[in-house]
Length: 297
Image (cartoon, rainbow, N blue to C red):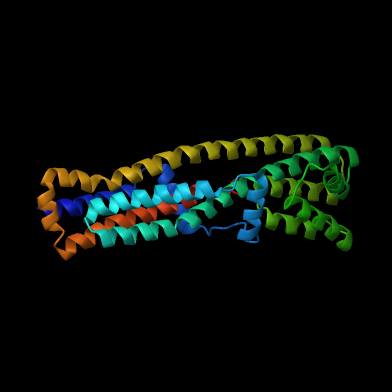
């Protein structure tokens, strides 16, 4: 009977993780169907340097605090599951090893948000400059010289300008920038300028005004998605922690002595380890989903 109850808890944990509403369903689809790291050209070193420059990287004190919180939580949960010091030490060690990875995911999120803000500045100001220059390349040069952009977007903008002059056309430079920054607002704006350049600048004012409105709508959608992610993240972590304590409830129902007797059985330990590993796996993937690039989709 005790084993059946334990298996029911394990099935509940797995079923909850696989079926908890549209947001979590979307998370599963994205994590399985899409490749992560759409900013693959950016190395961890570049991401870390930019987060340090922005003053948002973890300080040694904050990093130690993360180690203490995650390691302490892993110690409490593992000991209350197995009542074994060696197993507790093992789980604490594994949990602490994931702290740098979680810090890296956070850095990628902050870097992605920073890049998105610069892309927003790039698209808006290129449209403004074009109203004056009536030339796409001259608009790029105006944004470059205005001092409102920073690396890495500024460096890629300079490459884009150079490619336009070297090739005599803007197609290749546009493709280069679109691949580096696969945002809808970038692709849509570049497609409009490509059309204007190829067909002439007749009656472009209304089209550019509509494009500005589209960019505003896309930006609003991205910031709304960011708020939804924050809400999802809070709920996901909360329910993930609660699921860990289902076994504690079972101990209260069975009494601690009965639970300790069950721990002598190898298959009971196997089920408990499976519960811990499965829940941790989904918590880590939830963190990955929360820290994915913003504004691309």
